[in-house]
Image 1 (cartoon, helix red, strand yellow):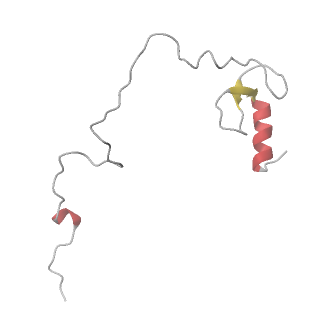
Image 2 (cartoon, helix red, strand yellow; image 1 turned 30 degrees about the horizontal axis):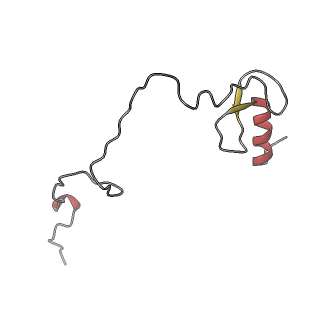
Length: 92
């Protein structure tokens, strides 16, 4: 039996829409904007700069603590690596 019906998606295109599809329907028209404002970030003063590791007290380049989701850089690379190895079960 020969199938004469063209069932490709391109054969029956969907009618064009007036607005693009969205994941959720907002109450009204919305848009995103990037705005530059004078002054420092409001949270810039709330986070002091850490110059020594919270775990061992060493200085240098600081990294985030892998045990939580706080992005503050509070520990050295050696301590961060040790904690990651402990969590993942890597070689000691």
